[in-house]
Image (cartoon, rainbow, N blue to C red):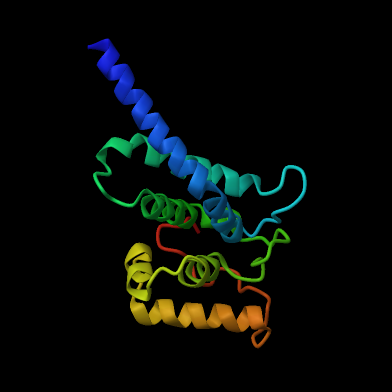
Length: 164
């Protein structure tokens, strides 16, 4: 019986290791965009790494129960939800690519444009209406293209579940 359980654990760990080997780089880049941290240099993006580690730990804990569900999608959803809950920590610019955007603008822009999540799924994931997601995405693109004032508004666009 112990040999059977040990074999299952090895198989589980092997499957998860293969998933992480293929997906961790892209997921880390997604987390780095969300936290607006610089991606290069020693000790770069520590908040993004913590977010991703927590999301991967959740995916590993649920690995047996995924039953055909896409582990990348599950991890991305958890990453977005964790970022939304902790968004108040990621409001100050840190020198990253998207540091001109508010946390909500970063989250919508990354999900919609970088990750390619459809508008309806983004709206459902964030608890927003489709029109709101579209408006936030358009405003984010305008800011990044320089057609809008780049200074983020304090207290604007709080994420659902985010601390004030």
